[in-house]
Length: 283
Length: 30
Image: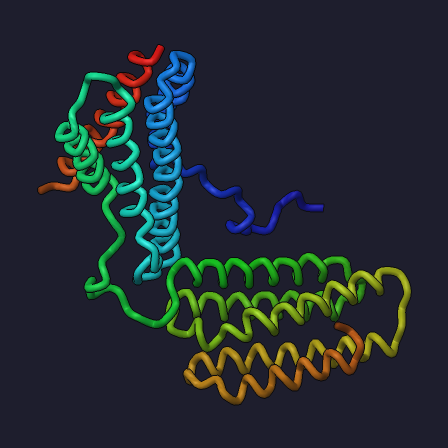
């Protein structure tokens, strides 16, 4: 048997995000500083340093999230506002506040109010220049379609996971015809995801398909694979065959509708399918 | 301003400030 594996870039582990890691590392000396100040009995100093440390950690998380969303957006060819929350700007402000507290209250007799404010401003400016902020609302590249990259990534990842589950469950089914049909269903469903990725304005229209319908298909397949590993039951096989036919119909209709940008009829088909799934007792 | 220059200035400004302040706080408290 060949040792070759199917090429599947999705299964490779997610790349480590190095950008923004220094934001976690550089404020680390604040931790022993807070403990030292506490042991000296300087409560205000210790509290200021601890608050500065906490704000710096919060800032690191926010800024890195902003960077990750932008990277995912680029990876998936989205050209739109990454998120409704300006994570990098919020992070920079949190870091600036933290550093202001450390400078003013955390280091005795070193910096005045004016100096401390300057440190805070330096942090915001530095962060803006180095990491950049999230695109503004007026950016002409940003098309308002009522869904952010963050929501879109979540939607597509979830759907991708469901298709993976259908494929995995399909491998456990002994019936060669079903296995082949499930493979084709997974491939066709991925085509739909690709279409949405290319034109995210379809996402809203396909939301029901991605959430409700794919979930139903996954449950049916997993249920069938689980219960029919060993015994053959011709009646249930027929039921499953009929369900597969409906799934194939809905997928091809969804593709057609995405092309036509009209989804109202499809919603009805999906509801019919749902009822059928319940009637056949496979969900 | 070229992006590399902008990034370098931002990097120095941001991490010098954070690094110096946290080291100052550490050395003054311990």
